[in-house]
Image (cartoon, rainbow, N blue to C red; front, side, top):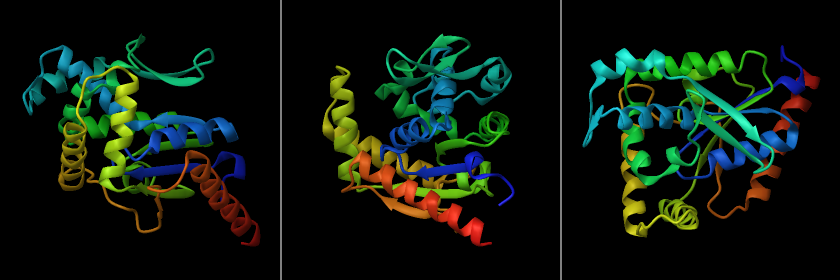
Length: 237
């Protein structure tokens, strides 16, 4: 490996609501890596489009969005008091707003637009130039970082993912049914896997992590073991 162990690039891809971001954040904190939430970046663009009337039902005004895309600034900051990574749009804290169901229901329509993906990939690569990065999303190991040191494809049963999402939103006070969330998960899977631009798929050299029956701690241990294997292999090589 060209980079030292401390500067690995770890790509975590997978289905929606399978806990990619949670695991990536926890891992980054534990091993002192930089965490970049690519999904949040698409959610920011979705929120911007919604606020500016660029999404009507399931149709996006791509011409107007293309005009505004360079005006959207995205940054991440770690909130020490809340012990969490937070997302900012043009210096406005939008972490909670981009996680609501309204944004979740529209984000797949934004994420499939070619010029949006190209813009986000450029930003993601710029944020990761020095290595020591963990990034999760849909196309990190296949498009953004095809040469990532460790690629993980996370998944879980649809019902498990729906229940997790339901509990998360209920804790935030959102009035939403489990059935609505289950349909949202299925809908996002279909759109993500069948879009023309960078569809969700497992990279050939990615390792599958099905976390349907795993706790967050067990998932972290599993990934750290894979990192140790990479370190060992690189020394042997």
